[in-house]
Amino acid sequence: MVRSNTLHDQPLEFEFNLSSRLYRASTIMDERMGDGWLLYAPDFKGLPILIDDTSHDILNRFNDGAVAGEVLSACANETTSPFDRTLDTISFLEEHGFLRDRPVKSSYADIAYSLPISSMSIWLHINSDCNLACPYCFVESKQHQVMGNEVQDRVAKAIAHTVREHSLTEVNLKLAGGEPTLDVALMECIREKVAAELKSLDIRFMTSILSNGTLVSDRLLDFLKHPMTSIGISVDGFGEAHDIHRKFRGSGKGSWSIIEKNIQKLLENQIHPHIMTTTGKETLHTLPELLEWIFEQGLSTRVSVVRNPNCSWDDTPLEEATYAGYCDQLEECFERALCRLENSSVPFDLANSLAVCELSFEYPAFSGVTCGIGRNHVVITTAGNVASCPMTVHEGGIPMMDNLLSSCKAAFPYSPMDRASLKGEEDCRECQWYPVCVGGCPVTNLRVNKKPFSKSPFCQFYKYFIPRYIRFLSKKLHQQTSVLSQV
Image (cartoon, rainbow, N blue to C red; front, side):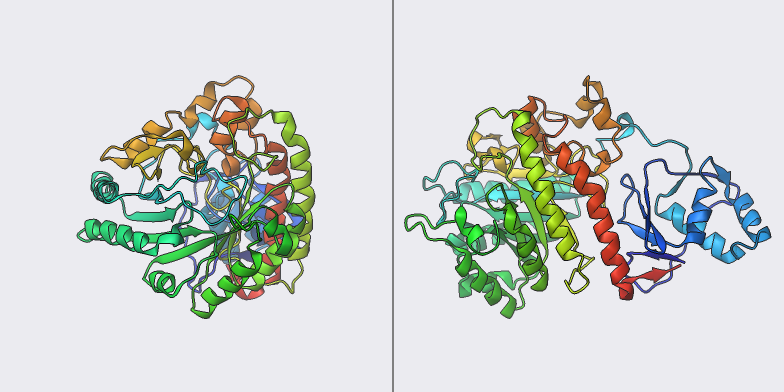
């Protein structure tokens, strides 16, 4: 029996040539788990699967390469596995990337940065006003800046032009600030303008709000009930830990009690916010409680780590050595969190899972980046300029072109392919987990290493967390037998 995390009821159908010579992938994670085996291919689309001993034996027959038809015959002759069962297993293993048509993994140089782009994410900095005063916020200026009508019109037309130019099928408009919910009317106006420009195009158009969750008015609820609209709420920690940094401007009071009530208000209106968890040295200790609370609410989350260990955002050069202790603390707190979530009584939706930093578990980052920087994640300032990343909006950006993907590339004129020629990066390029992290955040790397596509200062943490999280997912998969498909 092969058990996967596939959440559908239709039978799986695979085709392959019986005369094909297949090889066990050299990159896979393969570990004993209970009465079965955990398999995960970091350089192939998909999350971990669990297989039994018989299926694992079939996989091992391809260690040095073998012809599929010969393995089928051998298993049938040895009566270790019926023909149909062996055929299904080989098909399944090939479909999920555990069997390949070549003996070695592709090198970094083989990764094509020019992969076709079908979607575009537009991060709009619509205002700079905010009712909170978080010390690590990368929107440096709190002066009154609002995206004006002329910029709104140019942005809407540029989005439509780019969709036509590149035959895109999906656009995700992200409304950010400052605090965008301070001006719901502005959000309504921008969405209407973009929707009008895209009306004649066959496009999936989504809108999301990036908010601190302190303001949930009836008008905002109406906005969120529009199709293909969602909201993300930033949370730093559980209870009082959240209030360490997320204090109201002026009064200095914490915001946890208010956002907790507002999240319940959203849920009562059948709106499920995505929790954007930001954690740092002073709030990490409550991560286990926070994640359990999030999943008990039936919500999803992405955990981001404050890039500067000092929980501030400035242009002060950072040294790699300052991250060593930070990584130790991250490992300790994430270990406690995963141990807590592994309890079978804690609800966990495998369809949403848990996103952490820029790590890409289900989809290997063959483009060389996981966040879309310099590729298809377009960041537009209130003035209508294009910045390389939300963390660099304070730098001003470059003038926006009609083709937003060209603007995106021009704003970040680096290529992941540069890594192939960097000395000292061989270990990074050949690392088993490279397809998941691709070296981490390019902006952080640029500040620390002076090179965007270089070894992340969080490498130590990534090497701990990636295999640990795969084991965690597999344990939750094992617990939730109702969602397992059998082949």
